[in-house]
Length: 153
Image (cartoon, rainbow, N blue to C red):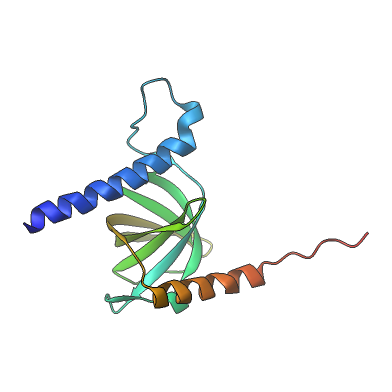
């Protein structure tokens, strides 16, 4: 029973990640070659570590850059050493975010305060109302911090 549920969750994750990679690389693919194994994909995502491995810690959510992605996993670039065992990764679609629960495979120091984090997605997660509110409030702090004023002429 649990094996069937796990395979269904992994199939949903695979569909999300393959679709994302395919959409980002569609112009460079030959006809019929729509299921590449891994593709470079640079976009802003949001990394939300789990506090004590149980609940998303939205107070420590932060933007990261994806490096590459496949149906089996993704890697992100961050400027903070990650010591959590699992995280939520929020990937932005035009109308909403998709949240993936991921196990942390590795956090490799690249030098100069930068890290590559390898992640293995396990399932798509839906946030409840309070979690959405806390996520949105945290994102707003980054929008405020990076607001650019128009140049005076």
